[in-house]
Length: 111
Image (cartoon, rainbow, N blue to C red; front, side):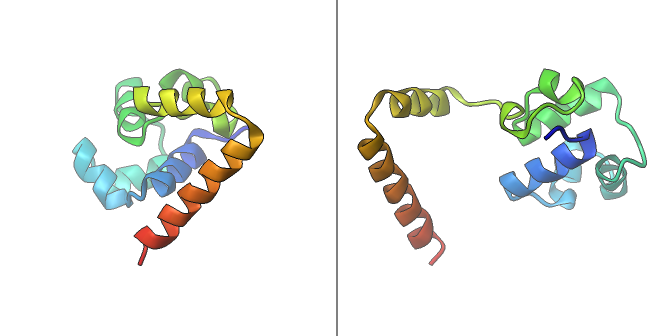
């Protein structure tokens, strides 16, 4: 499912655990401006969108090309790429063990 830029920004903020106020502070824009971008009331210039993509760890090209598929818009860090590469090389059973461990860590981190 393709998404518009405002929806992509909103979802990325949720993934990053960021509020509009925090993104506004990081970009030196007003919270109202961020809200207008998210709600499609205002379009950002390319420099501002590039800055937002950097903060939200989004692939700028994927975002501007019409809101690509959700799983293609995030930029992976080198460490994330290494983890993903290693994950793809192990057996399905080992992958399930890793997912179980990650879920265990997430469950215990929140407490």
